[in-house]
Length: 485
Ligand code: UN1
Image (cartoon, rainbow, N blue to C red; front, side, top):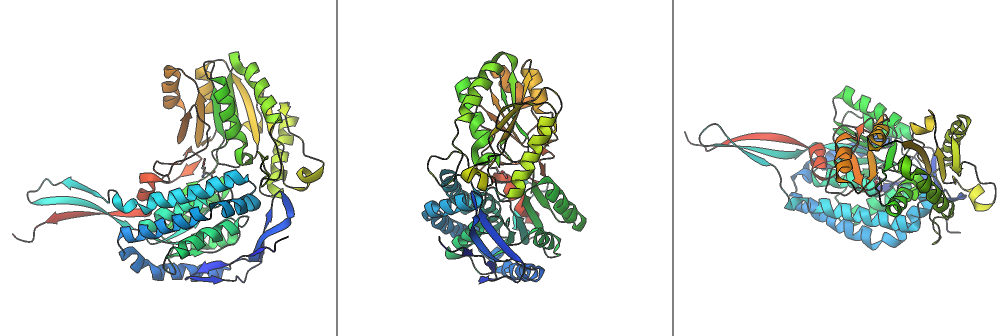
């Protein structure tokens, strides 16, 4: 067995050992295997990191955006070159399959490349002036030292899509990743360092929520970008708002797939399975509710259950595996608690629902892919379980299906399966989400378009594309005239 990776923090360009409690990341498929371990950062380390980011700020902001972008482009090459080995490490530390892990590392490279080329895009705006001899320019400036707080479920792609825009627009960063995935965090920081990022421009502090709170509350933090649970996100947003600091919080989802009578059923089956069960359902964009119109419901469910029963659950680093474990024992218990509550409320379990009792599946943090049909109210319709669990309801027609889709306090994404243009247009108009897929799964995001949710799924400006520029810069409106009377 290889020895665990040593966990270190990157502060002012130095890889430092922390002085806090031990942090250990384990392989969730084989929890006795330690992937990385070391001491947590302390509040003093957070202060040191914020000070380093502050010192690096002026010279980084002064560099031409093309030079800042060149560092991201070089980092993209490093990330891409390591996609196979880091993808395997990702699967081992986080639990998604190796193919998904490699895909995620490649996606991080793509994100770095997209922002690396930002210098070639529009930098601001120019307006006509009502006064002769004058033009009005709107220019963009960095905000300063930004706190980035990221979740476990995309250990390299989500950090890349926050850190890359923060850096290219001239900010410096202090980043706190989830303590369940420190190895992949170190990999991204290594790539940026190897690419020539100056010391202090990106600082990595690894630790649990007190470290996140110390970072979010630090008086020199000028903006906070967070992805994670709704409870933590709201706490951070409240603290940031109290200090008058902009915050971007991407939080929960309870995303519906809606299959209408006229859908291509095979396509819908494939996409619903991907949306609900890839990454063991641990995406904020995962499909966790399925709404079927009556005419196709029985046929769809019979075929869906057959296919889901045939999914290979196992060690995510084995080629045949389609579904790995969830991240921790606590997450696994929470999901089974939610399933237990649902079963006490008279749902019909179509497949799954029970823990594994033998072999690897009993030792690791595995959850059986589960489909439950609801006939009445049950928490499983509204509560985000963040696991491979699909709650099903039937609707009489498209209108009722869209109303059911909106029956959630969340509004991140949805997927509608139909070949009918009228239904498609109605879905676009009525379904209240930040991301809508027509005939594709509810998960997925491209770096050049806005990403984020409606209702309680998101707070503050969206991420990615032009939305990221809005968040990571502020504008100066310049009234520009010649110097002579
Ligand atoms: C995707 O759907 O590929 O935490 C990305 C999450 C989201 C990212 C989803 N912020 O799952």
